[in-house]
Image (cartoon, rainbow, N blue to C red; front, side, top):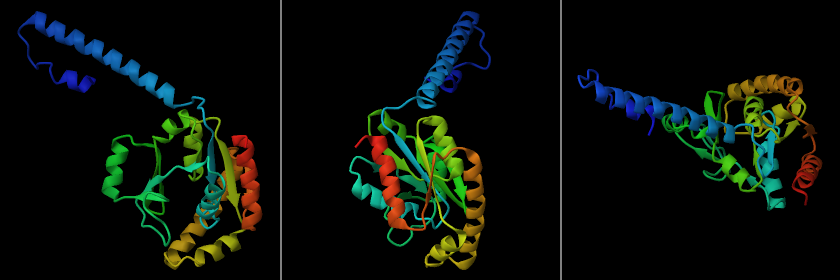
Length: 236
């Protein structure tokens, strides 16, 4: 039972001193036990060495993270995508429960309040959250690949220190061209993404998070390189 639940039983004014003392002591014991358990849970989740590897794949908008991941998953049967939750609308070809869990802002806030996410980020006015259940799969020996931004990668690295971080990048003119090919967003939104991409590239290079930097100018060559990194990690 949580301290708040125990606290609800404590009378505001109790004339029976023995009863008040007993309730108060029980409350203190409960509070101590509760805090101790929370510390144990946090220690188990954060900073532990998990059984299966986690691959963190990051990069600016338009670099090809989703397409590359789809191809890698088709090639590597042992690997599974971490399905994040977002409030943005699905793009053409994206499927609920396959690429993202698409939810309303209200539903996302409720999930965040229930501590369903390891990390939460806002991008372009939309929220994104990485599910806490990811750690359960890793602890059971199930390798996972996840696609956060630089801030999200840093947060996940705190939970999984052994995670392998791969940064994908391409020249800004190529990113601009790829974003322009998307018909799902207006021009001002595309320009906003390019501005953010410029800042993200600078952050990634100065973060010391990413042990691998992949040039995504040539998709086929880049995917082969990433596949080689993951195969070596999975020992296959």
